[in-house]
Structures are given as C-alpha cells and as structure tokens.
Length: 277
Image (cartoon, rainbow, N blue to C red):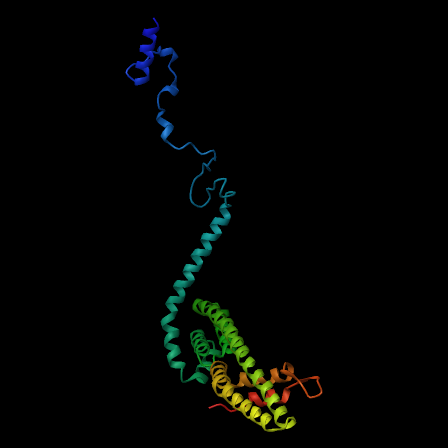
C-alpha cells in the first residue's frame, strides 16, 4: 500500500497524473479568470452627463458652470470676429501709412477730422520712427479705437503700448550702462586734476600723464560708442534730459584733499558734454 501511494505522489509531481476533483468542489480560482488580464475598474466615478465642456472627474475638480462655458465660447467668438474685422481693415491703413510717411501734418489734420484709418496710419508711423514717438502714437491710436469703428485700431493700440513698455526698459538699460561709464570717467578726471595740481615730482608727473592717456582711451573706446548708441535710440533731447538730471541729483562722489567725500557735479557735467565723433 505504501508503494502505491508513493507512486501516485510521483505521478502527480511530474504532471502525468491529475487527481479527480468533483464538480461541486471545483473552485473558480483553480482556472485562470478571463477578466484577470484586464485592468481593474477605476474606483472613481465619472460624470454621467459626459461632454468635453462640463464633464469632470474627481481628479479634475468640480464640474464647470454651464453659464461660464457659454461666456467663454462667446468671448472666443468675439475675439475671432475682431481679428477678422481687423484683417479686413489692414489694406486700408497700410495704404494710408505709405501716403502719410511724408505728409504727416496733413494726415494728422485728416485724423483730427475723424478719419480713423488715417489716425491709425499716423500712429503706426510714429511708433516706427527713430526715435519713436510713443506718446503721440498712443494718443492717435486710442482716438481711432475709442470711436468704436475700428477693431484694428484697438488691437494695434495694445501692440503699441507693449512696444512702448519694452522700449522704455531697453532705454533704461542703455542709460544705466552709459551712466556707469560716465561716472567712472568723472571720478578719473577728478583724480587726474588732483594729481596734476597737488602732487609734485617727475614720478607723479609721469603717473598723471598715463592717467590722462587712460581717460582718453576710455572716452574713445567706451563712453563715445555708448553715448552714440543711446542717442540713436532715444534722441539727443532725452540724452540731455537724463544727463542733466543725473549730474544734479545723482552725481558721482570721491574723497577730496580734506578727506571728506565730495560730489563731482562739475566733472559729471563736463563728461556728458564731451563731444564725440
């Protein structure tokens, strides 16, 4: 009997023999489940209403308000309509820009008389001059936009304001660079004057001469190029306004013969008045 049982065990272990199991005792787990290869159903419940505009899952947050969705669609449609209207106006104001390029006074009078396309044309020309006149450009574009008859004017008005902001940032950066060079020159001029008048001897004379050469090199290689670039972008009037304000309100300083700090207003003014080729 022991031998028979041992043989049965060996057969079962090799797979050649499968013990009989009554149907009533067969478990569903004994055979692979058909659904086991499929992902388990999500525990999150989706909105039964469906749709792209309002359906949201628990991960997406609460369902959007239908009125909010309708308003957003309306805004999109209005923006598309405005763009289409602006495109239809483009040939008109582009032609006016060409006509007004050399006849600005006449076009400005025409604009003041209520011609919106001429207002927009002059505004765009002013925004693209060197240096640009953004103040007047914004005024004329706003005049055309406020009439309620030009979608292009309202769109271009925003573009002009964005350009004005960017332009102002660039000018401030250019002035900051120029002022740094100018203040350094003003300080060196002060030190050179001090060395030339207060120090004696051949060695000090040689040092003062080298300092003068250094000042001339900075002026030619750094200050004048920076000044030229700034004046080209901002205009000579803005350069004069900024330099005057800078030297009177924020001049460089240096330690004088008495050991006290001195403001170098005169040296600052002289530097910015330096003629450049």
